[in-house]
Amino acid sequence: MDRRQRKTRELIFNAFILLLSKKHYNAITVGEIIELANVGRATFYSHFETKDFLLKELCIELFSHLFNAENDGDNDGIFNCDIHGNVFLHLFKHVKENDNNIRKLLTSKNNELFVEYFKGEVTKLFKERLLDFIDKKPASIPQEFWLNHITSTFIETLRWWIETKMKQTPEVIYNYFLELI
Image (cartoon, rainbow, N blue to C red; front, side, top):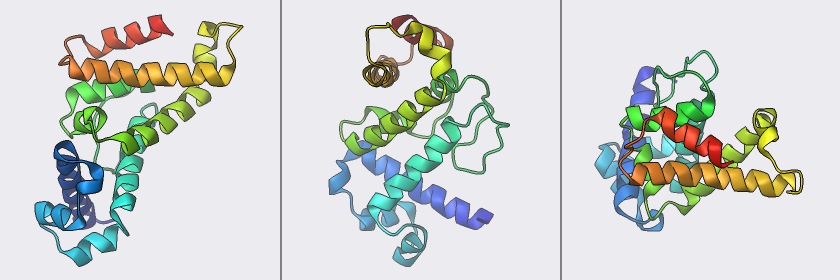
């Protein structure tokens, strides 16, 4: 993807995120997105087949960046940053230090589909790193139940932190989460 195409996608993503922060997903039209992004309808459809595909692509961009934090940090997506290290701590740091409307997506009352995608990705991430947390799992609890619990706890910890104006540092909130699981 060339620089012009990336810029166009970024304009569309940012318009979409702004609209999601103001209205329910089902009430948003492609017309509103293209008007706010200042792109043509044909341009929108050359990048995204539908509004649902736009949300899915936005999530892929976001999750690809956030959940590949332990890699070399080279990411050509719209969510570039210089934060590295533990992927879960990275997520807290990213939310705190970057203004790309992720907070709006996580805390919007109209974000059920986004949270569903997010929870799926966080669950996969915990499964991939199960050995990092397995010592915290009580022996009597089934693994799938426990994974659902820690994933839900992680997401709710992140949402609570955002809603309370992120008064704690990312490191402190991450340690709170670790103590609870």
